[in-house]
Image (cartoon, rainbow, N blue to C red; front, side, top):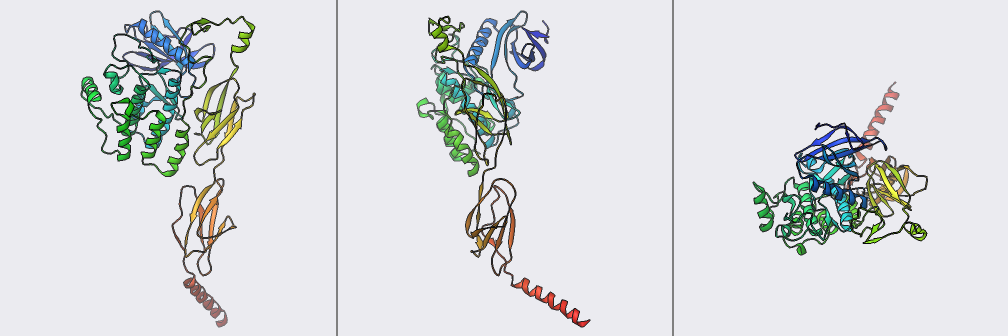
Amino acid sequence: MSLDPSTIGRYKVLGTLGAGAMGTVYLAEDPLLKRGLAIKVVREGTGNTEILERFKREAEISARLNHPNAITVFDVGEEPGLGPYLVMEHVDGQSLSELLRRGPLPAEAALDLLLQAASALEAVHGLGILHRDIKPGNFLVTQEGRLKLMDFGIARGNQGRLTSTAVFLGTPAYAAPELLAGARASEATDRWAFTMTAYEMLVGDLPYAGDNVGAILYRIAHETPTLSADLPPAVAAVFRRALEKDPAARFPDLRTFLIALLEALPLTEGVREAFRGQVANLARTTGTLRLNPSAPFSRNPWVWGGGVLVAGLLGGFLLFRPQASRTLSIESRPAGAEVTLDGTPLGRTPLRQVVVKGKAELLRLEKPDYQPLEYHLQPSDRDIALRLVPAPFEVHVVTEPAGAEILLDGSTKGTTPQVLQVPGEGTHVLHLKLDGYLPWNTTLERHKPLPDPIKLQKTRGRKLSEEGKLKKFFKGIFAK
């Protein structure tokens, strides 16, 4: 067997993206659709039958879940002499685990990624599916900062397990204590792993350390977490609650956990306020769903809940016909705006290949320091480029002494003290005047406060100096 096949199935192999003990990921191209792909191939001898079943499950879940923060799987198969393979979208970026090898993330960057991860996981749970292997290695981060949840190979509905012999599936270091005690996987165990991932993003390490897997598992099951001494007390308290042994004592959902974390982290009030709206709006969403998201998996798309949908009947065709879809590209100037479509989060601009099914009406873009922008989609829209307008900002103008006249770009705005509203666009000059004092000028900048107070300088010394110059000038004239 060649280690570098030229084709896998119908796909043309262009190169190798990565390789590990379990297999290889190739960069490939679909010759029919002319799009770049990533193909994951399992190394021979790793249990092909079970791996193929996992790949099929991953493809089935992806077919039901269409979310901007989840990897899209296009195909699954088995190549003779090579093994099972999975064809998915190619993401130009790196795994979160690779990102964390360079150290913990700044709080603002970690929150941004955690919000995207929570949106994806809530969408998965909204379909009645448990991921069961949440960890940094199963998140990809694109060059633009978009996070993608991947690897649904051991995901399952909350009613069963993949095998009957394993105590649990997933990564031991992120396993919840109830799993180690023999309980079934649940949304709470996914949230535990999410919490461990959040801690690792902020600290750079895990709260349960050990020299071997056995020691780590024992500490997860029996000991309290060892939290970094560098964590602010309020942040440590949030993680202690989120890592309680009893699932009922933890935060009830990801939204509540992220709200508590946001309020505890040492952030500026402007950053905190920008995130509050995003966290508050975090709701369970399943992205673009198929006709019956709660139905059990079926390899036959016409089998529905144990019954057969007869497509030949006219009424059935009209009722269940698939909705038309289109692909959008959404950009903003500047980039990095959070986008929602009819209330469903899509991610941050620039967005590529956003699949929209059925009727879609309202795009909303939000970015800190810019006015929210709403755009009504037209049937002909495909490539959308929108310009964001900077939002007005406030400056507190306080002088000593008070009562100075305020001029903004030459227009009188009253006297000090005052909270001055400044337009977001353009350059704006503040001019202060008070009889008996020197004028004071500055160019206003967002997030750059003025001195508090602005101490105005008296003009008496300068007047005497000017008078002295005039006397000297006229004395010289008359002397001539």
